[in-house]
Image (tube, rainbow, N blue to C red; front, side, top):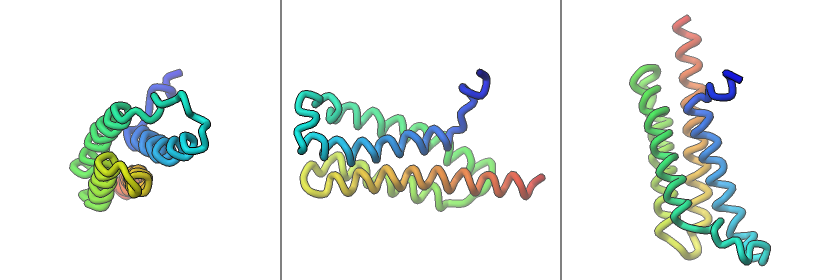
Length: 128
């Protein structure tokens, strides 16, 4: 049971970002097909803002912490910043490009966590 609550911040950030990308791509398609006619709570923008807020908190903790303590590599931070910028543009732009920016933003943030985790593991392996 102990391992259930021992979750790496990069893992949490990756899964949160991937869920965001899946949500942003699937919900509009399902609504347009009429499959979520009464499920408008799934496309509530307040939920989107809360998920983005949690994503920023998790990314700040994970990416900034590893940058300061481990590797000093700006790539994950730059990718996450660009991803969150895309997510914010996607939230503001409600026509046409919203889907593209939101999915790209979620995937960029998820990729930033993957790269941060790999860079951190390489630094830990070199120090041993």
